[in-house]
Image 1: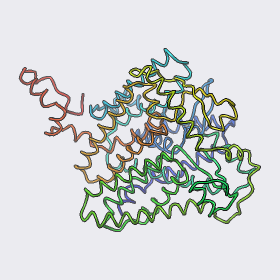
Image 2: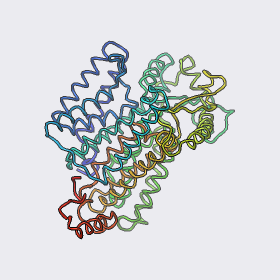
Image 3: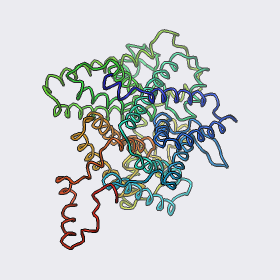
Image 4: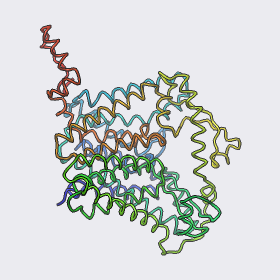
Length: 544
């Protein structure tokens, strides 16, 4: 069994794929029916039972939903006037069982300062943003704006578990299974939307839109339009042809899986035969990213792939020869991935139908991404003006900004384009506006502590390529957040939590000269000894 199959292909890979398929089918047929609430309660009960038997398994279920469920609204229903989603049900089930197990002393919390302090600071920033928001803004807007940060609570069960090698392998299988599902779903949607008639498409489009799984917009080819992409598409599809942008926020995890496998390609497989399944995975993952047509994803992918390329020179023998070979292979894979994306559109069976009767056709066709980008820049000025008014504490969650948008979809509803919203595309400005300097400092602290942990773990353990690949995924997350908010979304926060079990935090806090000197612990301890206070422990162990 090769290292790829050993780490990524296993029982949980197939459980994720089959589970995602079943839930999507159930959601397609039973959304907004009387069956939806019983289904939600059934999933909640099942998660409670499974989590009670094995809390790590409960977390695997939670990560599966977070990775594949989009915005978490595949299934949702009103319970006592409150809209409750599948994501909320799973969260409540896992946290309830964690609380019961802590009360019964079946498990216990083990705090490690370097690992947990950034999360404490993020939590404080969220509390400050919430309190300021309650004082300044509408209560409902505040709650709706901050509730994504509740994902942080999963830190408690994560640090209560002693993650062994088998548990970490299960986590990797959940990541890979989720990426495989999202890739297959993306390719399937691209094929279906270019091969089904308008009436059938309307049903599928309504499901994807209402469950908030994806943004699907048509790109119609016109000989009158300019641009390199349009010219290339014109050569392939002809005047009047069309293809679709299939964007899912969850495709972020496809990018993460791609980066982990790409890291392995340049680290452990660069001078040996690379498994065929690894090649296939790289190609299919990249094809899904191409179909997303996300500038943020492509920017992140480009920067992080460059980082992988540079880091590879510090690993292994004959770097110039081996890395050159793998780079050529990577370019070939990129070309084949683009070909796969195109094939989903031009595959001749059945013939591409006339879809002008589809209800979404005109609004999708009129969508101009350049105007959307223009609107984003129009938002930046008013946001910065409000940030400068309260730069330290921020203005709190639920803070609204008014600006003029050029987005034609909004102009159809608001002719003058004057839009007031509390949801912003500028990720770091969003944090600064709502949580002040403390919010930015908290997320910066997380990166510093994490990469310190990654550096130590990669040097001390044999799975350096996995840890580095996952760490570079965090780098991709922070780059993506510049233009597409992820750090304030359950998807981004879930990934920040997901990587924790892969770091040897305990090993880092053992007495080591470099760590003790850098942290100042040794100096503090010496001073306490001088004062004959050695009986009072210094925080250098798992317990604090």
